[in-house]
Length: 145
Image (cartoon, rainbow, N blue to C red; front, side):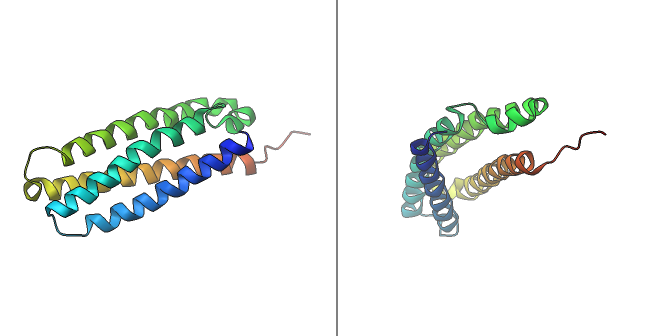
């Protein structure tokens, strides 16, 4: 990944981190019309941010450094790459649900739990990527004598 792409990816990752913090805060607020607007705005921002972040991660080969060292880890890398689409689709569904015609007070608790579940899935995905990268870079495979 070139330096410009790397910097841009860092910015998108930082923005994602900030938006997730904002999302946590909004989920603690009362279920009213104002809260619904804030929730929708944060989900909008995530819907704009995530595709760019995923694109930059995949631009020159998703986790290519890992695959260069350990080609047999391709299934795990493919599974993580596939999670990008799943995470984005779930986020889009949540956004649509928040903007639905249903009274927010009636759906708020279920939406909140689904958003929390989505956040946990995204965080787990990011940690899995990081752990895989760290393992690949730090693993010393011994050679026989």
